[in-house]
Length: 68
Image (tube, rainbow, N blue to C red; front, side, top):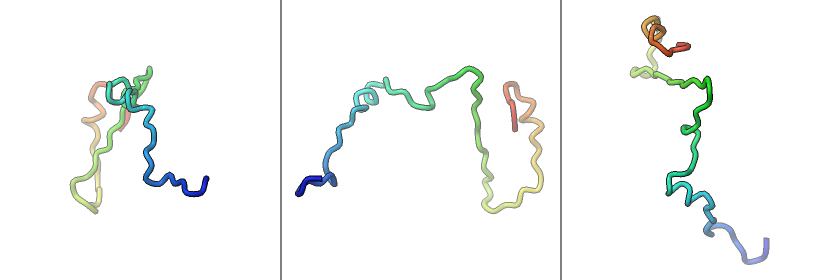
């Protein structure tokens, strides 16, 4: 690095800016592949609670559910 030059506080060119502000940017949530599955985490509303039993039978009966 040349003496007297610093990158701290310097502007960085944002080459992806135009795609983002125009709505053309592709994000991972925009990708849809054949056979792709979606996942969801359901957290307990009770911190540090001890899980004694989980009945997931109703969730397994829902159309499109592959695993619980």
